[in-house]
Image (tube, rainbow, N blue to C red; front, side, top):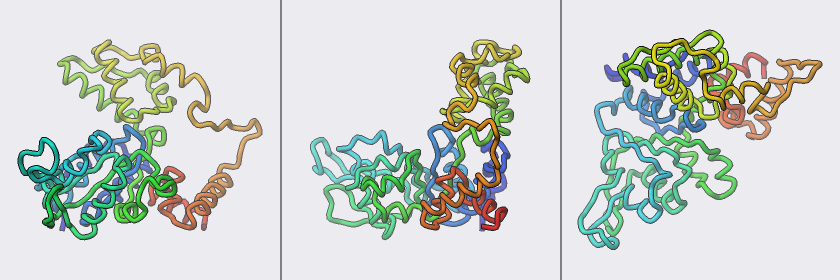
Length: 322
């Protein structure tokens, strides 16, 4: 049974483009279970926010939600920080300390940028996930901790598995419910709602009147490729709010690098439309078949290769009778 908090869950995930709606549906189903979740997506797509929403609508909503940026953990202290340590375990360890794992007991541990964990720690994390066993550095005793893992990454973990930089068994233990967050360039219809929200937020912080986007400025936002995704859009909104509070924002008021990128057709995609045009349906079928071939028939992996959620990918399979 879902907790009461679920009635308001996922409301902070703005935008209702089809690809985002598919993500939210998957996340809602996953939140109702207690399985581990892997969130994949480019930097700035909102992986931490999605993890928070999953936690808020889960049975663990009233328990700890511990956020760990794996990329920021000092290599020599990773094990201690994650699993805790005993006095004398290393120089400077004067007292017994809990790690993030113990602090997340009965709650959720969000491991951001999990691809940055050293292989040695990946092995210990796998043992913990499979058996709930946690062993402090410098201790021979094993503790049993009840924690749900939500992991996130902006890297291709399957490629890291192939190159030997990420454990295959750990990948499959985390990938029970994979969620692929789409980049902002695949959510063009959400940009107006997101921009208005960020403008209102920025104005509230500075106690000023929010600026308004002119149609030409909004069109430029929709044409931009957004390499920094939602985080970059928020920064742009904060910039124009600070510089032109309460005014009408025209295209020339947007950052110069934005106007430069939008001026070049096809920028950031590497694809140029042939003068004779293309058959979009045939191209989509061909790409789906290539993705399935690369993924050896694994639909979740094929969806990831195409930058689609699993639901969106299955819809296309049905659409083309594949």
